Structures are given as structure tokens and as C-alpha cells.
Image 1: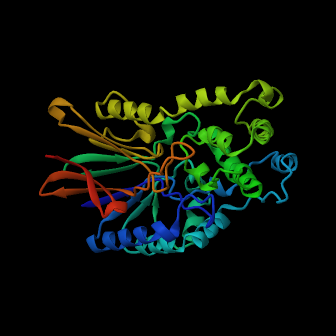
Image 2: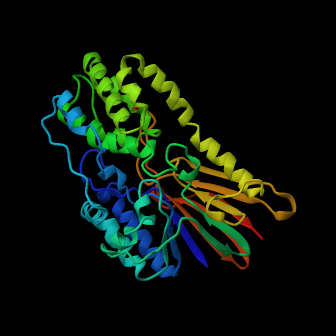
Length: 370
């Protein structure tokens, strides 16, 4: 058996600035991968956030008021049905979506709902995906026996307080970034002497790091006005207590940055939970079996750790990062890697290989176990 896993592709409905997945650049990599999987008659698992439906959805409340306060000429967009969001994603990413749809009719393909495409696990989600040609299994947790070892794949947002619930704080922030922050930046234009790139906003992790970036892009007066109205919009949609909108002058950018520092440790706490699961000291979500290999996504940070477990043999934890650009601040070069995990049974031995398709398939890590 051969299993391929990719995570956090984030196919969205944009084809301009502020897009998550660049189909012109990364679509051919998806198509080439699909051809390879078809030749090997393998299985593909899309381990969460294959689509970014939340980025195509505006916040429920207050967006019109935000546009008015920030003197924006554009009209706030409407909320669309899930089926229409998939159609938009297909239109913006024809190379990747068509390749994946073709592959789904040739080999087994399993899609795990993530926090950005949670709709796939809700009523009508599977039918909406099938309307653009996908013939897939939808599972919240994937477990496969390969080389007598148990491989478990989950998205991992279940371990993130801000994203484990439907329409939680993380989802609200995504709505606001794509439908308030980025439209404002597009209309505002760059500050003299500063290159502004709205795509950098969606590449930031954690997303709240946008505060520091915007301080560098906007003049002080504009930033203060923007920050005050941003807090109000977030409060109206439940990201902050409603009192925060009233007390916004007391919530400083420095306070937000301190909170971001805590959120940025998510990849480490996720790994700690994974180690405990490999040791049998932590039960995974969805009643998943104890894994020998545990694969998560969600954090957008590549991670690979071998866990010594005595007689049970070494275990392996992998976090697959993301297929979107990942940035740390306003000006640093983005991470452009395209991580791919390949798991197979080589003469009865489990073999796991992590490669970067953006670097001619260069192998980054390898794990073999009897």
C-alpha cells in the first residue's frame, strides 16, 4: 500500500492580491503529483484545509459600518452558499482543482475537514464538493495499517482553542482579514517609501501578527483609526468580548503582540500532545487508535520527531506545514516549500519519506521501521 498525504493547500476563491494558493505557480505541482499518484495506484489524503471556504465568507456583523468608518468606496460582499464557494474555488484554481477531481475518479482519495473547510463534515458539504467533480471519502480521522504499523492522520485544529469549534475566534479572524483588512489595504494603497503586499497578510501565522505588519505599512494616524475600528469589528463578531469594542483605546498594539507570542507556541503544544499519543498517554480525537505514525497539519510549521518507545518500537510524529506561502513578519522572505509525505510498505517494513516538491522533490526526512 502507498499513501500520500498533503495538508493545508487552502484553495480559495481569489486570483489576485490576498490569495492563499497561487494556482499559476503551484497548480502545476498539484497536477504533477496527481499524475504520479495515479501511476502508482496509491491513495491521497488531503489532511484538512484543502479548501479555504472561511476566507471567502465575510463576517456576520459590522462590516458595512467598518467600511463606512474607514471611508472605503467598495461595497461589503454577501455571504454565499457552500456550493457557490466551491465553484468560486474551482474558477480561481482551475489547474489544481481539475487535476484533483480527475484523480478522485481514478484512485482512492480521502478528504479530512479542517477548520477552514469544516463545511465538508456538515450537512450538504459532501454534495457541494461533488458538484465540482470530486469523488472522495470524507473522514475526520484517517487510520491505515501499513507494514503492520498504524498510521493516523488528522488535521489537528482540535488541539487549537481558537479553532476547534465551528465559527470560533480563528474563523472570525479569517473573515475579518479577507473582507475588512485586505480590502482596506487595497483601497488605501502603500505608504510613501514602503512596499505594501496584501498577500503577506494571509501568509502570516499566527494571523494576529497582522498588527505588527500594519504598523509598518500605515502612518500613525491611519493605524490608530484602523486599529480602533478593527477591534470593534472583531468584538461585534465574538472574537473579543463586546466590551473590548468600547474599551478599544485601552487595548494597545503591544498587548495584542504579547497575546500573539502565546499563540505562536501552538506548534510546540501540538507536538507535545502528539508525543503523548504515540506513548499511549493521550487519547486522540474521534476515538482514533493509538498510532505508530501520527500526522497533523494546521500549524503551518513543518515538524518531524522520532519518539523512542521501547519494545513497541520508535514512533513518528509529522506536521505537514502548508502549501501556502508562510511569513513571519513584514519583510522576511516567505517559506515557499510544498511538503509531501509518502508512506509505504517496503518488503514488510514501514517507510516514511518527507519531500519538498518545490525543490525538485528533495527528501527532507526519512523513517523506516520493521
